[in-house]
Length: 288
Image 1 (cartoon, rainbow, N blue to C red):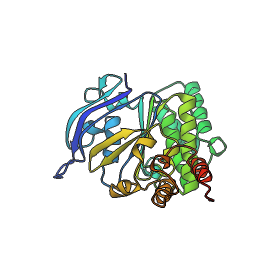
Image 2 (cartoon, rainbow, N blue to C red):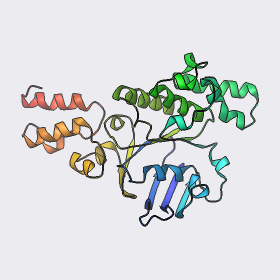
Image 3 (cartoon, helix red, strand yellow):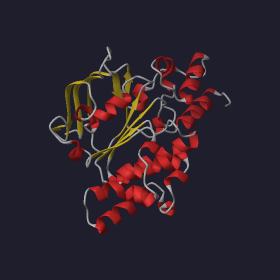
Image 4 (cartoon, rainbow, N blue to C red):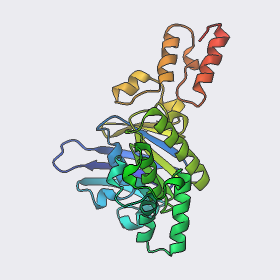
């Protein structure tokens, strides 16, 4: 059974003529790393909010279809109950950070679950460890870098021990190094804790090497779901829907057009793409 299953999910915000989501159907498996890619206005953030019940419980609008969390409809399950399993981190981490220290921030959610102090302390230590913030536990969140704030926002929801971690545009305010470090950390967290990671973004550059599957959204409609190799096949198409394609995809397309590579040798998002390209070029006798 999928951990999350969406069936013909549609949503329209008040006073909006066009729906933010239109009949989106998608199964998300336990333990997978799913990337939701789309441009501005594609419905990524709206889709993320349906996964933890904010839609339809707290966000006003017209909702239809169904979202099942391990077989239970989010329509009939309280958000407070869903939140213990599906944790959502918003696009701007500063909107989530309001305590005086890193440690207090990570402890806030489990404290509100009224857990014993020993359990809270253990959860905080684990969350700060997996996010690489243990040495900063006494530091004020306001003194952290952008990447560290993003990590802290994730630590604050990881401390709830969710089954699913949903991250809405966590890469948007990070530089390339920060994006890569965050993705490596998320991949490590997924493997260590066996949780499902769902991340929305408008860039495929770094995500392609970390996710299991990609869901492409355009103007609220799901264009397709598949492996990076299946979904990242045309930089032109990605640009049309507002997604920044991987640079290696663009490079390999130029090499195909120049006759250095065959179409079936084109790099389309798999890990070690650079090595694959160099290997293909060397077999043709070309020099990088």
